Length: 472
Image (cartoon, rainbow, N blue to C red; front, side, top):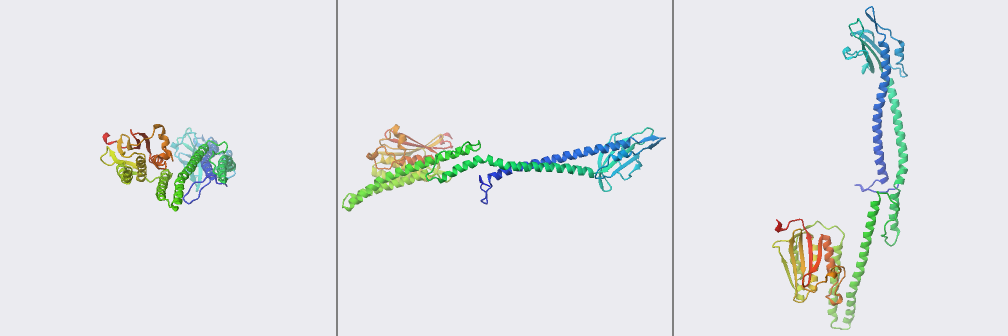
């Protein structure tokens, strides 16, 4: 049997979808068969009881009609036909008893006698009892005769072998019919399941054929018409393929861009090494500069890879943006001094400025913003890190006094390997703002570029559900 679907189990084994469906259908079918059997048993028992009681009541009536009063005495004539009505193949024992005012007139004295007051005149009553160690069914009635003060009670009883045999025969026929019906259903379910699961098999085969191709195929599945239950699965798989295609395309583009960016400093290194061998005095300086550019590029590529990593982040924690800002300033202060740029922290908050996030990612994001702000600033300029709260957000800003970015180019500036000033601008890889945007996306923050007048203002908003201090 082909396994069409698997469900992880604790022991590593799984049950096929076909078997699960069979059990899901056979289980209710068996329960229904049991319920129908119980209902059938109750109906058959009632029919057998009513049928045999009718015969037993007829025999009782035939005997009761012969009870008369002659010369002040009660007489009767037991008709043979009355007992002939009760004859059957199982040869049930038949008993009778006629009493007047509790005194036995004729019949079996040990037959359980009723209370005459509990009987209705000329109306048969039926009940079960035990006589001579056997269960019996008794039909009894009361007759009120003229000139006889005491009531006459007539009883006829028989054993239950015939009733039991008839009930068992009918129940056997019912159970046989149910077994035949279940067998037919089982024979029909198997091929019906095969036809019903064929679209799933086709879908699996279409997916498996993708494994035999050398180049990955991310085109939508072509499994033909699918049932409504499989269409969401097919659409979800197509969406996954589309995401994989975009991710693969982005990886290819990233690899191409990275190799292109790394080719320039490597070429410079090769040329300057050749010049150094010839004794050029400036070669070592150029080699050091190219090495620094290559190191920065590799560092930013690793940072971007970490920011783009699809794995789950550890649980978020409370991070103090003020402490992170102070750490970034400590790291970038030498770069700022060498560039002749003032680096400062400004904010409305006297105490900590907490946000939900991850300190390493926040540090990397702010460090790239400050690095960009220093590089694209001017001598004697200023880079200001601002922290303040809004009603529904905590805001971090980085403002510089450089040339800024025109509004129409701000979206482009956040793309990877984009350098608006080209080789005329400061050395760089064009990854700083791309890293910031990727980290912000992972942290659920929003990044905006605005005009600082002069210079560029980068605004990062972290959503928060806590009310601002002014609102408390």
